[in-house]
Image (cartoon, rainbow, N blue to C red; front, side, top):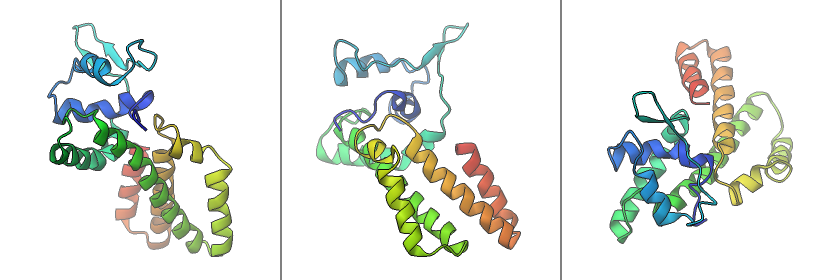
Length: 188
C-alpha cells in the first residue's frame, strides 16, 4: 500500500500531477519522483514516456483512467496539504487515495450490476451469489487488495455503468442515456 501508484498506474495517473501540480506536460518531474518514492535499484521503474521527433515527451496511455482517479487525487491533495504531507502527487495520501479508488469503484460497479440484475428480474439471492463469485472467483480480490497498478477494477465499473445505461436507453428511448453510454464507452 506504500506504492499503489505503480506499474501501469504510473502512466494512467501521471496526467493529474503533470497538469495540476507540476504544470509539466513533458513529465520531467517523474525522474525526481522515482528517486524520492521508489527503490533506488529501479526495480519498480516503468517509463511511460515516449519521446517525439521534436524532443518532447508524451504519455503513451490514454487519460481516461486519470479522469476516474481525479476525485481521489483532489481529496488526497487536500489531505496532504492539511496533514503536512508533501503535495507532490506521490506522497502517502496520494498513494492511499488511488488504492481507495479501486474499492470505491468496485462497489459502485456492484451496485450498478445489482440494478441491471433487478431490471432483468434476477432474484437478489442469485445476484449476491454472482457477487461472491466476482469477488472470490476472479482476480478482483487480488486487484482490490494487492495490485492497484492495473485498470481492471475501473473497467469493471465502467462496463457495468455502460450496460446499465444501454438498458435504460432500450427501455425509455431517452437519447440522454445513449449519450452517457458513449461517454462511458469512451472512458472504457
